Image 1: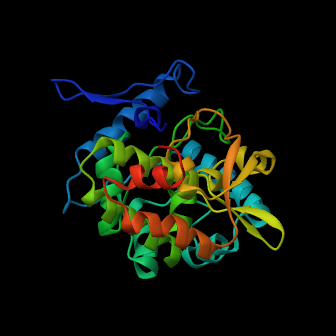
Image 2: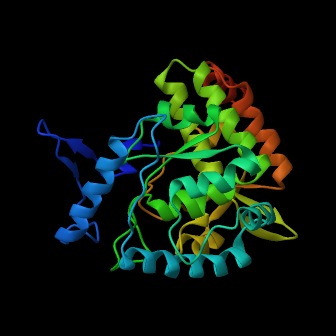
Length: 297
């Protein structure tokens, strides 16, 4: 099952107002005091943000900008080979900069005319209900920090590269943006944690790690694949299964390893019908209904 706390390094604020990002012992930047101070400062700006205020502007360092340039160039090459046509067309319209890290207001300025989505800052973990629920207003909570410079092609947690190169290129598609909005509308109808977790897991295996067959080839559309230099290659070796909401919503998986099982759509239309259709009608009883229909109850 999906465990939301695993996705981000926890962020705390002391009684004195000091903000700390708690990196794991395995994090590439855990022993770099400058990086840790940087993460704390960026998280503090996000925590101080409130709707109606100007979005935090991060004065990215040359080192951080170089990480963005390296990853942008490498992923652009991977996308041409492995990304779904729908994503490539959306990315071309969005036209993210490859020479510098875009500020969140820059991302929003490009996205709003395309699909109405805008970005707001996140210090780290955003609770599931808030994160997914904001999609109903076409809002996406995004981190602003960049992975450690010692490992530019790896991150143990979603950073700005994942949030922007992965999700923004996906959300720039009207078809995918409509699915995100359906997710947000569904969250407003859900009252149980069981249903919310089921929704998160279906989202994981579709909008994060979804693949689609195109002209006899398997292409990716999930943001987790689109933003991962390593996994965008490895998904070719995963066991592919047809879209199955009952299985996707109950699968046990480890987010710290490449996904060995992925769910492959036969077309973008099937993603809209099966995944988008599920989110569009989801309520608290939906997990029970789909499991009962699949003969698993």
